[in-house]
Image 1 (spheres, one colour):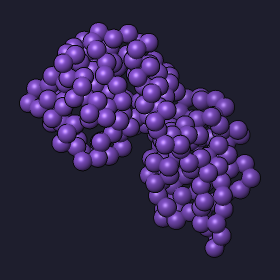
Image 2: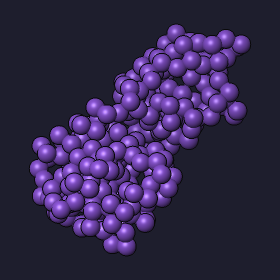
Image 3: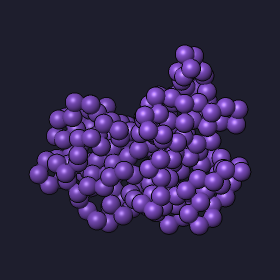
Length: 221
């Protein structure tokens, strides 16, 4: 689940950042000290918002009320007074500072259980035929001018779509952008040497600008 933190106190930011990093199914895509700094495009793709209530410029409650498309929200606050109002806004949970990792994990588990099930199978159209493929069987996806090449053990499919479209479809299934032309299923990687990824007997280059984020997502900093 992709999450954003809106929190104006540095120690609280650090705690949340640490808790999110410890939780396998969470990915922090933004950390902000005030709500007005959050870009609207990020709000379109976020699943969970960790929102402090006492914030500069606009309060967490007012900010939440202003959103047309609301992600799941977990309030983080030192003030118990807002609890009733928070639940009328249908937030997932209300974390009272200081909160433990156990309490945090309980809140994000609740949010995770509310996520709609992910679509693992895709129908792709190529050669005047619809083929059904599963995310798990895809080894990698490669950009090729106006097409993408979807490589599985059984077959290679050429589809008139963009790599970015497939990145959005497959991100939740452990696919990582490793190069401007390659998206790789991390579960299919056998080894990494230098700037090359080995997927079975095939090698895929790691782009210089993608290397740091790729290794970080594999758990190496």
